[in-house]
Length: 327
Length: 257
Image 1 (tube, rainbow over the protein chains, first blue to last red):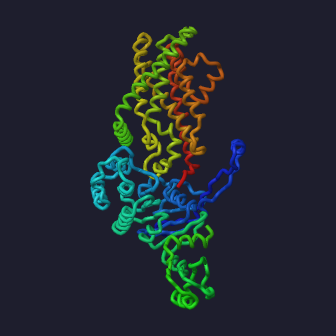
Image 2 (cartoon, helix red, strand yellow):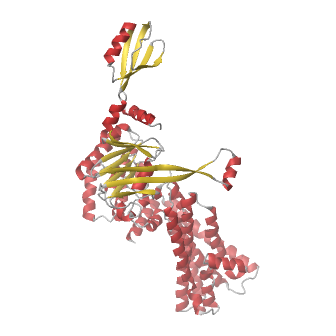
Image 3 (cartoon, chains in turn cyan, blue):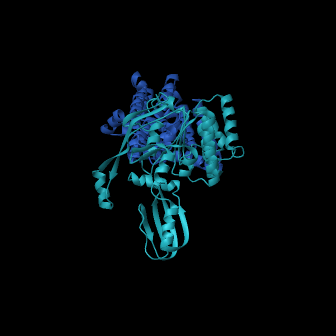
């Protein structure tokens, strides 16, 4: 039995539909048109203890809904998830003391009060022993470099500082699992790197299982190799990041700037994407071609001024991936 | 319980960040309750409905109902403003804590300025007890204390039911205000002035008369002994309210990402 076993998890929402306009608004007041949307549709996966797993998908794919079911906030309509032998919704109180959750867009800290007071309250909520609490707090403060901001009211913190505090707050009770819902949203480059570094460290040191969602592919590249891709509520892919990358960088883009061209040469498995007066953009299938090969053919056909090879970044890989699954 | 005090102190810390505004609202709140009573009193004087109750008895009824309402407004604000908690998604954060939801919802918002009203209504009750000295004995005072407690439970239950509706509608329902404010408005007058339908409605649908009618009859007009125990019926109302809330939680959908 895996540490986290999710089996055929399904959640259906009823969404009201109406056309715009006052007349329709009044109409729906009396009779509602409801459409059932499967936010999460028979999703299954397993996660072992100590793993870091990225859960990705476009907006509205069902990421947050899945996280909410895994954290016991929502009750699944169908299917079960068993995490460390517990059912999140039914054994809520027992279960949530084992997990830490950070919602990038919601704060668990008290807005007007110094961070430390919020931590103290969490100590009482989780019934953490004073000696354990002091030890863990000290550890987290050191790792996340919070010493200077611990006595500052939350409203005066920068977003990066706040996020570091949020993460510390979610780890005070030494959870076994950490859920991070877009932990780096809105952060600057430096803070992002810091947060990532910390997540890696905590995973290594304390064997905390981490499940994170993010739209920032560099987050995911930096943290993990296992990704679960979800779209329209269905699980589309579960496996290593590298193999997606390999699969979707089988194509490279080649930009050629030239002075004159006699005739655009036709090469097998090389598609013309754009052609303007002095520029050609090609899509090269790397299976049957090499860049140098294509360039040499082109140099015969025209006078080349400049060449750019555009490697698809991780973002593009994901775009390609979503495209393939028609999201 | 200890946690509850912690929440209280957290809110107090927040409140202390905005001192002067707090003091001003505090004063305004306690003055407003007096104006309410004077309006009521002059009305009754004009229409000479004071035959059945004297003005101190009136003040006592008024105080009991206002105490319940203000106390639940002050300390159960989280249930009263539950729609906010759902709309801004903070309810999700309560669900990921290993504590009872009730305590956490109560702890989510505390309206210290409403304590002004609580104190004022307690003052009114004590004042009327002193003035009604002749009819007061130990048992009667106990009955009054029970009335106050049950009055609080009554309004608390109405808040819980209102909160439960937010699970379905997200938006808070104005209809709940009819019950909370309506119950207070109706309840601050002696129930005798209303017609039979309203009287029955506020006995069996919302147990208001068990708080502000039957026990008062027991104390002043020699009602049978079981009139004094009527306030306890609000406990049934509370149990129903909690069940409705739990049912709503089962259908909770959460909002946004």
